[in-house]
Image 1 (tube, one colour):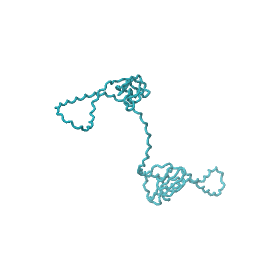
Image 2 (spheres, rainbow, N blue to C red; image 1 turned 135 degrees about the horizontal axis):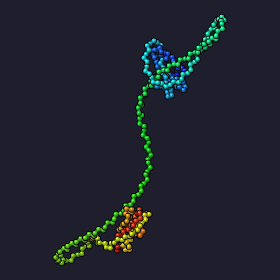
Image 3 (cartoon, rainbow, N blue to C red; image 1 turned 30 degrees about the horizontal axis):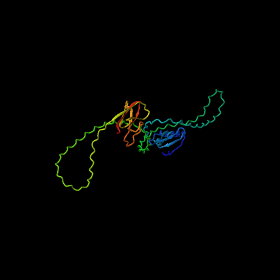
Image 4 (cartoon, one colour; image 1 turned 30 degrees about the vertical axis):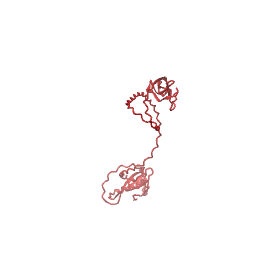
Length: 320
Protein backbone atom coordinates (compact mmCIF):
# COMPACT_ATOMS: atom_id res chain seq x y z
CA UNK A 1 0.00 0.00 0.00
CA UNK A 2 1.63 3.30 -1.06
CA UNK A 3 1.82 6.20 1.37
CA UNK A 4 -0.79 9.02 0.96
CA UNK A 5 1.72 11.34 -0.71
CA UNK A 6 3.17 8.71 -3.07
CA UNK A 7 2.51 9.08 -6.78
CA UNK A 8 2.09 6.14 -9.12
CA UNK A 9 1.71 5.94 -12.91
CA UNK A 10 -0.24 2.84 -13.90
CA UNK A 11 -2.18 1.79 -16.95
CA UNK A 12 -5.97 1.54 -16.76
CA UNK A 13 -5.58 -2.27 -16.92
CA UNK A 14 -3.61 -2.14 -13.67
CA UNK A 15 -6.35 0.02 -12.16
CA UNK A 16 -8.92 -2.62 -13.09
CA UNK A 17 -6.86 -5.41 -11.54
CA UNK A 18 -6.37 -3.43 -8.36
CA UNK A 19 -10.08 -2.74 -8.15
CA UNK A 20 -10.85 -6.47 -8.56
CA UNK A 21 -8.51 -7.37 -5.73
CA UNK A 22 -10.09 -4.70 -3.58
CA UNK A 23 -13.59 -6.04 -4.29
CA UNK A 24 -12.51 -9.61 -3.39
CA UNK A 25 -11.09 -8.44 -0.12
CA UNK A 26 -14.18 -6.40 0.60
CA UNK A 27 -16.34 -9.54 0.20
CA UNK A 28 -14.58 -11.00 3.20
CA UNK A 29 -16.63 -8.50 5.28
CA UNK A 30 -13.92 -7.25 7.61
CA UNK A 31 -14.10 -4.32 9.99
CA UNK A 32 -10.59 -3.08 9.02
CA UNK A 33 -11.42 -1.29 5.77
CA UNK A 34 -9.51 1.55 4.15
CA UNK A 35 -10.64 3.79 1.27
CA UNK A 36 -8.02 4.39 -1.45
CA UNK A 37 -8.41 7.54 -3.54
CA UNK A 38 -6.77 8.17 -6.93
CA UNK A 39 -6.82 10.68 -9.78
CA UNK A 40 -6.43 9.65 -13.44
CA UNK A 41 -6.52 11.05 -16.96
CA UNK A 42 -8.60 9.17 -19.53
CA UNK A 43 -6.42 10.39 -22.41
CA UNK A 44 -3.13 9.00 -21.05
CA UNK A 45 -4.31 6.25 -18.68
CA UNK A 46 -2.05 7.62 -15.93
CA UNK A 47 -3.16 7.31 -12.32
CA UNK A 48 -1.98 9.02 -9.11
CA UNK A 49 -2.69 7.77 -5.61
CA UNK A 50 -3.70 10.78 -3.45
CA UNK A 51 -4.82 11.42 0.07
CA UNK A 52 -8.18 12.98 -0.96
CA UNK A 53 -9.86 13.57 -4.29
CA UNK A 54 -9.57 17.31 -3.62
CA UNK A 55 -5.95 16.93 -4.81
CA UNK A 56 -7.11 16.02 -8.33
CA UNK A 57 -5.90 18.48 -10.93
CA UNK A 58 -7.96 20.18 -13.67
CA UNK A 59 -8.74 17.67 -16.43
CA UNK A 60 -8.38 14.62 -14.09
CA UNK A 61 -11.19 12.30 -13.02
CA UNK A 62 -11.20 10.55 -9.62
CA UNK A 63 -11.86 7.02 -8.42
CA UNK A 64 -12.09 5.31 -5.02
CA UNK A 65 -12.04 1.69 -3.89
CA UNK A 66 -12.11 -0.13 -0.55
CA UNK A 67 -9.30 -2.32 0.63
CA UNK A 68 -10.25 -4.80 3.38
CA UNK A 69 -7.84 -6.64 5.73
CA UNK A 70 -8.00 -10.44 6.14
CA UNK A 71 -10.13 -11.68 8.95
CA UNK A 72 -13.60 -12.87 9.83
CA UNK A 73 -15.07 -9.83 11.42
CA UNK A 74 -18.72 -9.15 10.95
CA UNK A 75 -19.62 -7.17 7.87
CA UNK A 76 -20.05 -3.51 8.59
CA UNK A 77 -23.26 -1.69 7.60
CA UNK A 78 -23.46 -0.53 4.03
CA UNK A 79 -22.22 3.03 3.59
CA UNK A 80 -24.44 5.69 2.01
CA UNK A 81 -24.50 5.86 -1.74
CA UNK A 82 -21.92 8.36 -2.99
CA UNK A 83 -22.42 10.92 -5.72
CA UNK A 84 -22.22 9.34 -9.15
CA UNK A 85 -18.69 9.66 -10.53
CA UNK A 86 -17.76 10.43 -14.10
CA UNK A 87 -17.84 7.64 -16.68
CA UNK A 88 -14.54 5.72 -16.55
CA UNK A 89 -12.59 4.76 -19.66
CA UNK A 90 -13.21 1.24 -21.06
CA UNK A 91 -10.94 -1.41 -19.44
CA UNK A 92 -8.18 -3.03 -21.48
CA UNK A 93 -8.81 -6.43 -23.09
CA UNK A 94 -7.89 -9.24 -20.68
CA UNK A 95 -5.18 -11.74 -21.78
CA UNK A 96 -6.21 -14.92 -23.58
CA UNK A 97 -6.39 -18.00 -21.37
CA UNK A 98 -3.86 -20.88 -21.83
CA UNK A 99 -4.47 -23.74 -24.31
CA UNK A 100 -6.17 -26.76 -22.67
CA UNK A 101 -4.14 -30.02 -22.28
CA UNK A 102 -5.00 -32.56 -25.03
CA UNK A 103 -6.67 -35.75 -23.80
CA UNK A 104 -4.77 -39.17 -23.89
CA UNK A 105 -5.33 -41.59 -26.80
CA UNK A 106 -7.74 -44.36 -25.95
CA UNK A 107 -6.86 -48.10 -26.43
CA UNK A 108 -7.50 -49.61 -29.82
CA UNK A 109 -10.79 -51.45 -29.65
CA UNK A 110 -11.89 -54.38 -31.70
CA UNK A 111 -13.05 -53.66 -35.08
CA UNK A 112 -16.73 -53.41 -34.79
CA UNK A 113 -19.34 -52.96 -37.28
CA UNK A 114 -19.13 -49.91 -39.23
CA UNK A 115 -21.20 -47.55 -37.30
CA UNK A 116 -22.55 -44.20 -38.21
CA UNK A 117 -20.38 -41.20 -38.18
CA UNK A 118 -19.92 -40.19 -34.60
CA UNK A 119 -20.26 -36.63 -33.41
CA UNK A 120 -17.31 -34.32 -33.63
CA UNK A 121 -15.16 -34.29 -30.57
CA UNK A 122 -15.41 -31.22 -28.35
CA UNK A 123 -12.99 -28.38 -28.93
CA UNK A 124 -10.50 -27.64 -26.26
CA UNK A 125 -11.79 -25.16 -23.67
CA UNK A 126 -11.05 -21.46 -24.17
CA UNK A 127 -9.26 -19.76 -21.35
CA UNK A 128 -11.54 -17.83 -19.04
CA UNK A 129 -11.67 -14.04 -19.44
CA UNK A 130 -10.45 -12.19 -16.45
CA UNK A 131 -13.27 -10.75 -14.36
CA UNK A 132 -13.85 -6.99 -14.57
CA UNK A 133 -13.13 -5.29 -11.33
CA UNK A 134 -16.06 -3.73 -9.50
CA UNK A 135 -16.33 0.05 -9.70
CA UNK A 136 -15.15 1.68 -6.57
CA UNK A 137 -17.52 3.79 -4.49
CA UNK A 138 -17.29 7.45 -5.48
CA UNK A 139 -15.97 9.65 -2.78
CA UNK A 140 -17.75 12.75 -1.53
CA UNK A 141 -16.49 16.13 -2.59
CA UNK A 142 -14.42 18.04 -0.14
CA UNK A 143 -15.93 21.03 1.71
CA UNK A 144 -15.72 24.39 0.00
CA UNK A 145 -12.89 26.49 1.40
CA UNK A 146 -13.69 29.64 3.38
CA UNK A 147 -13.84 32.90 1.49
CA UNK A 148 -10.57 34.76 1.65
CA UNK A 149 -10.41 38.12 3.42
CA UNK A 150 -10.92 41.13 1.12
CA UNK A 151 -7.74 42.73 -0.16
CA UNK A 152 -6.63 46.12 1.08
CA UNK A 153 -7.52 49.28 -0.83
CA UNK A 154 -5.04 50.02 -3.61
CA UNK A 155 -3.13 53.32 -3.74
CA UNK A 156 -4.81 56.39 -5.20
CA UNK A 157 -4.26 56.92 -8.93
CA UNK A 158 -2.25 59.91 -10.16
CA UNK A 159 -3.95 63.28 -10.58
CA UNK A 160 -5.27 63.82 -14.09
CA UNK A 161 -3.84 66.63 -16.26
CA UNK A 162 -5.24 70.16 -15.92
CA UNK A 163 -7.93 70.94 -18.47
CA UNK A 164 -7.28 73.55 -21.17
CA UNK A 165 -8.21 77.17 -20.39
CA UNK A 166 -11.59 78.11 -21.84
CA UNK A 167 -11.83 80.76 -24.56
CA UNK A 168 -12.19 84.43 -23.47
CA UNK A 169 -15.78 85.63 -23.61
CA UNK A 170 -16.80 88.37 -26.04
CA UNK A 171 -16.43 91.97 -24.83
CA UNK A 172 -19.63 93.49 -23.46
CA UNK A 173 -21.34 96.29 -25.33
CA UNK A 174 -20.48 99.81 -24.02
CA UNK A 175 -23.01 101.53 -21.83
CA UNK A 176 -24.63 104.80 -22.86
CA UNK A 177 -23.71 108.14 -21.26
CA UNK A 178 -26.14 109.68 -18.86
CA UNK A 179 -28.04 112.80 -19.90
CA UNK A 180 -26.44 116.21 -19.19
CA UNK A 181 -27.95 117.75 -16.08
CA UNK A 182 -29.63 121.13 -16.32
CA UNK A 183 -27.68 124.24 -15.24
CA UNK A 184 -28.61 125.27 -11.70
CA UNK A 185 -30.19 128.70 -11.09
CA UNK A 186 -27.95 131.58 -9.93
CA UNK A 187 -28.33 132.29 -6.21
CA UNK A 188 -29.60 135.77 -5.13
CA UNK A 189 -27.08 138.45 -4.20
CA UNK A 190 -26.74 139.23 -0.50
CA UNK A 191 -28.34 142.47 0.80
CA UNK A 192 -25.89 145.35 1.52
CA UNK A 193 -25.24 146.16 5.17
CA UNK A 194 -26.76 149.28 6.72
CA UNK A 195 -24.66 152.48 6.80
CA UNK A 196 -23.53 153.45 10.27
CA UNK A 197 -24.51 156.81 11.78
CA UNK A 198 -22.13 159.75 11.22
CA UNK A 199 -20.22 160.67 14.33
CA UNK A 200 -19.76 164.24 15.49
CA UNK A 201 -16.90 166.18 14.05
CA UNK A 202 -14.02 166.33 16.45
CA UNK A 203 -11.76 169.27 17.04
CA UNK A 204 -8.91 169.70 14.65
CA UNK A 205 -5.74 168.52 16.23
CA UNK A 206 -2.13 169.28 15.50
CA UNK A 207 -0.72 167.74 12.40
CA UNK A 208 1.40 164.82 13.53
CA UNK A 209 4.39 163.28 11.86
CA UNK A 210 3.78 161.00 8.93
CA UNK A 211 3.59 157.40 10.11
CA UNK A 212 4.89 154.32 8.26
CA UNK A 213 2.88 152.79 5.41
CA UNK A 214 0.57 150.11 6.70
CA UNK A 215 0.52 146.54 5.36
CA UNK A 216 -1.75 145.66 2.43
CA UNK A 217 -5.05 144.33 3.64
CA UNK A 218 -6.35 140.90 2.74
CA UNK A 219 -8.22 140.43 -0.58
CA UNK A 220 -11.95 140.42 -0.10
CA UNK A 221 -14.13 137.44 -0.94
CA UNK A 222 -15.15 136.97 -4.58
CA UNK A 223 -18.60 138.16 -5.27
CA UNK A 224 -21.29 135.81 -6.65
CA UNK A 225 -21.00 134.86 -10.36
CA UNK A 226 -23.17 136.72 -12.72
CA UNK A 227 -25.59 134.91 -15.06
CA UNK A 228 -24.36 133.68 -18.47
CA UNK A 229 -26.17 135.14 -21.38
CA UNK A 230 -26.35 133.85 -24.93
CA UNK A 231 -26.60 130.08 -24.05
CA UNK A 232 -28.18 128.02 -26.83
CA UNK A 233 -28.10 124.53 -28.32
CA UNK A 234 -27.91 123.14 -31.82
CA UNK A 235 -28.85 119.70 -33.26
CA UNK A 236 -27.32 117.87 -36.22
CA UNK A 237 -29.51 115.05 -37.76
CA UNK A 238 -28.03 111.92 -39.36
CA UNK A 239 -30.47 109.73 -41.35
CA UNK A 240 -30.39 105.93 -41.91
CA UNK A 241 -26.88 105.33 -40.70
CA UNK A 242 -25.56 101.85 -41.70
CA UNK A 243 -24.17 99.68 -38.84
CA UNK A 244 -20.86 98.81 -40.48
CA UNK A 245 -18.57 100.05 -37.66
CA UNK A 246 -18.25 102.66 -34.95
CA UNK A 247 -19.25 106.18 -36.23
CA UNK A 248 -18.14 109.61 -34.97
CA UNK A 249 -20.95 112.19 -35.38
CA UNK A 250 -20.69 115.92 -34.48
CA UNK A 251 -22.89 119.01 -33.93
CA UNK A 252 -21.46 122.48 -34.82
CA UNK A 253 -22.04 125.46 -32.51
CA UNK A 254 -20.74 127.85 -35.22
CA UNK A 255 -18.15 130.65 -35.19
CA UNK A 256 -17.74 132.65 -31.97
CA UNK A 257 -19.30 129.93 -29.85
CA UNK A 258 -17.92 126.98 -27.89
CA UNK A 259 -19.59 123.61 -27.17
CA UNK A 260 -19.80 123.22 -23.38
CA UNK A 261 -21.95 120.06 -23.37
CA UNK A 262 -24.00 117.78 -25.55
CA UNK A 263 -25.47 114.32 -26.21
CA UNK A 264 -27.52 112.39 -28.76
CA UNK A 265 -30.97 110.99 -29.50
CA UNK A 266 -31.63 107.66 -31.33
CA UNK A 267 -34.85 106.47 -32.99
CA UNK A 268 -33.95 102.90 -31.89
CA UNK A 269 -32.11 103.20 -28.55
CA UNK A 270 -32.17 99.45 -27.78
CA UNK A 271 -29.99 98.79 -30.85
CA UNK A 272 -27.71 101.84 -30.30
CA UNK A 273 -24.54 101.90 -28.16
CA UNK A 274 -22.51 104.98 -27.17
CA UNK A 275 -18.80 104.80 -26.38
CA UNK A 276 -17.72 108.48 -26.03
CA UNK A 277 -19.19 112.01 -25.80
CA UNK A 278 -16.77 114.98 -25.78
CA UNK A 279 -15.92 118.53 -27.10
CA UNK A 280 -14.20 118.36 -30.49
CA UNK A 281 -11.95 120.71 -32.45
CA UNK A 282 -13.26 119.88 -35.94
CA UNK A 283 -16.17 118.17 -37.82
CA UNK A 284 -14.22 114.84 -37.91
CA UNK A 285 -14.53 114.64 -34.13
CA UNK A 286 -10.88 115.25 -33.16
CA UNK A 287 -10.93 115.68 -29.34
CA UNK A 288 -10.24 119.26 -28.20
CA UNK A 289 -6.77 119.76 -26.69
CA UNK A 290 -6.48 119.52 -22.89
CA UNK A 291 -6.89 123.07 -21.47
CA UNK A 292 -8.37 124.54 -24.67
CA UNK A 293 -10.69 127.53 -24.00
CA UNK A 294 -12.85 126.93 -27.06
CA UNK A 295 -14.23 123.89 -28.89
CA UNK A 296 -16.70 124.68 -31.67
CA UNK A 297 -18.04 121.07 -32.01
CA UNK A 298 -19.58 118.42 -29.74
CA UNK A 299 -18.90 114.82 -30.80
CA UNK A 300 -20.32 111.36 -29.93
CA UNK A 301 -18.80 108.02 -30.88
CA UNK A 302 -21.69 105.63 -31.54
CA UNK A 303 -22.55 102.15 -32.91
CA UNK A 304 -25.80 100.77 -34.42
CA UNK A 305 -26.92 97.17 -34.86
CA UNK A 306 -29.67 98.15 -37.36
CA UNK A 307 -29.99 101.20 -39.71
CA UNK A 308 -30.97 104.15 -37.55
CA UNK A 309 -31.80 107.91 -37.47
CA UNK A 310 -29.79 109.90 -34.90
CA UNK A 311 -29.49 113.55 -33.78
CA UNK A 312 -26.40 114.98 -32.05
CA UNK A 313 -26.96 117.93 -29.70
CA UNK A 314 -24.45 120.62 -28.59
CA UNK A 315 -24.94 123.19 -25.79
CA UNK A 316 -23.27 126.38 -27.04
CA UNK A 317 -21.94 129.43 -25.21
CA UNK A 318 -20.47 132.63 -26.68
CA UNK A 319 -16.71 132.79 -26.52
CA UNK A 320 -16.68 136.59 -25.62
